[in-house]
Amino acid sequence: MKLFDVYPLQPVTITKASGSYVWNDAGVRYLDMYGGHAVISIGHTHPHWVKRIEHQLETMAFYSNSVHLPIQEELADKLTRLSGKDNYQVFLCNSGAEANENALKLASFHNGRKKIIAFHKSFHGRTSLAVAATDNPSIIAPVNETDAVIFLPLNDEQALADCFQQNGDAISSVIIEGIQGVGGIRVANNEFLQLIRRYCDQYGAVMIADSVQCGYGRSGRFFAHDYAGIDADIYTMAKGMGNGFPVGGLLIAPHIRPKHGMLGTTFGGNPLACAAALGVLEVMESESLIPHALELGNYLMEQLRKIPQLMNIRGRGLMIGFDMPPELGTIKNRLLSEYHIFTGEAKPAVIRLLPALTLSQAQADDFLQSLQQAIQTHPITTS
Ligand SMILES: Cc1ncc(COP(=O)(O)O)c(C=O)c1O
Image (tube, rainbow, N blue to C red; front, side, top):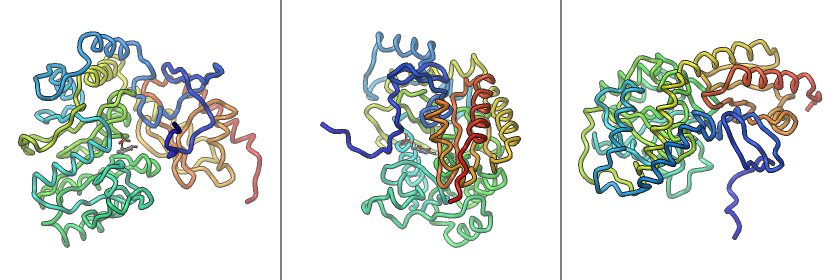
């Protein structure tokens, strides 16, 4: 049977991974500055995380959400402590799209409304409402088309004000990434996030902080939205939450009340996923990875700004983007094939860095040196 061909693949076969490195099938080592698409938070195959999962596997891999599972409460307590979101409730699921789908649905259950505000270049996932709130018509199937979603320019305060004035009583939720990932590392301004908070309060809309990519410490704060000094009504999480084990979740403010049957899942919150998520938080805490991400991210951005060919260096913590001039358009491929470094990209010519939060300064320096060398030796093209 053939694999359903939906991904343009990099010409590399990865068979082993550890920390910030992965190895191909010929034993060649690659530096992973992409973290498997921002998923690897505490480093590939971190020994504590492996042990945590192994232990759980030997104890009990699965039982359904129809019984009391104490490890879910252990995870909820740890999440409260690390996120600082006291009195929030947690709903566990399996992926980023599922987290956003549930968040949008929950907001609508909560206020009985139908309209959603999302932003240009947003990405929220590929399921029904999540994809409808994603600003990419090419991935929206006809069956997902809806007039429920209003797209506004990111950081445009006037457009937000006009939209609430015209539709205020119909707006169920506003969904916003603290730092857009797929959209090319575009940071939501603190003032803009504060304004969303104010309008949501004024009009009874639910503020959803999509933290699937920018959350879980990557930005140097637990949630990137924390930089604005506000609390969202719902935070959605996935990617870094399991360090590669599929797990997602929602943190839900106390004023949003649950009702039996409102949300549900077979696999969400299963003991193995909870063990993986606990393993991640334990390592984040014991290795002080959130302050490390901030410090190393600042260092990386400072050094990148010294490379004259790079433009618009931006981001927070270890979620960094920069624009490449057109003549250096293929640098990502050269970094991979000649320097054995994985990076991410976004259209039209953005390089995205999303390494594990355990990246060391020496590894960051290796990357910077290779990038500089690749730029200096890049063949000049005129087209
Ligand atoms: C901000 C954001 N939200 C949601 C998703 C969807 O997550 P998943 O692929 O786990 O469904 C992604 C995935 O890239 C994302 O970057």
